[in-house]
Amino acid sequence: MKNLYSPWRIDYILQEKDDGCILCEKPKANDDKSHLILKRGKYSYIVMNLYPYNNAHLMIVPFRHCSHFYEYDEEEILEIGKMIQLSEKILTKVYKPDGFNIGMNLGEDAGAGITDHLHIHIVPRWKGDTNFFSTIGKTRVIPEKMEDIYQKLKNEFRKK
Image (cartoon, rainbow, N blue to C red; front, side):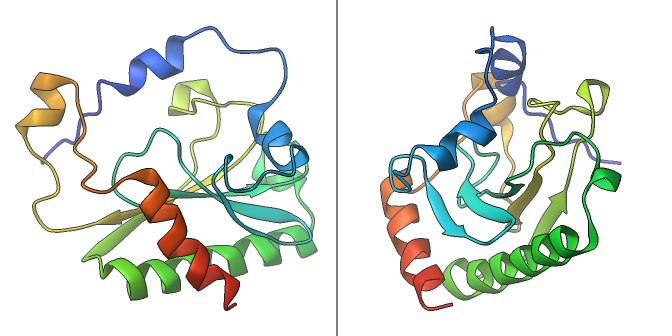
């Protein structure tokens, strides 16, 4: 079995958090570009991860603040599923990854950095996208500026 380590994330996980929920606050700011929000739906939004595991790492975030998947109703779950599907489709078109990791971490012990507001990670993966640099240098190589990634993806999301 191979392991993928991301030790640089522990600093984010352990840092002191503000009292509010960043996933609730981002869409209220009405500044999608500076908050990296790519698309808004009725019940959820798509946002770039500010602390990405890989290039073009996205998150689907429900607007309603809940920590468990079972707390969302059928309409919310349907839209979340459609947002995942749309994200996978656009990431495939724009970045042509070899695969994806798609999932949620529910609770601190499951690795959730934000424990009280469920969100789904969509991480594009390419053959050979892990290397020693992440583990030894505590640095992840993201080969493109966040602003450039945002603009490329935003252009595609606007079409949908």
